[in-house]
Image (cartoon, rainbow, N blue to C red; front, side, top):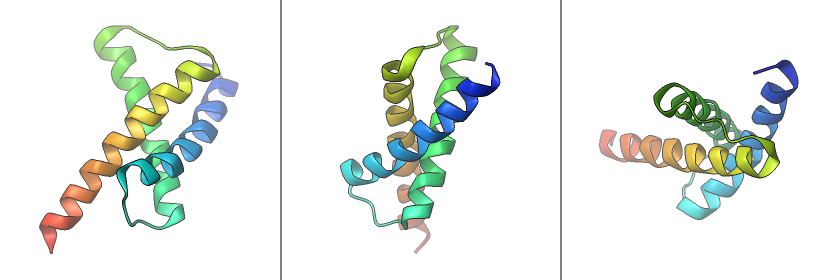
Length: 85
């Protein structure tokens, strides 16, 4: 991935984190949702690329990948947080 795609993936991941937090109905801070969204987007892109050899290009493909990754990581984080208390 070249530099502009990484920047685009980070920006899309931040927005996806905010939207995924609304969909999953979690109670994290805005900054936490953005960070989890970015981590989810990067992680899902890496998973798709390494496991399946797939790269969803373009804005829509990156946004779908970021939403799936962000929602997944937010749900996992919420599950861990709820089980700790």
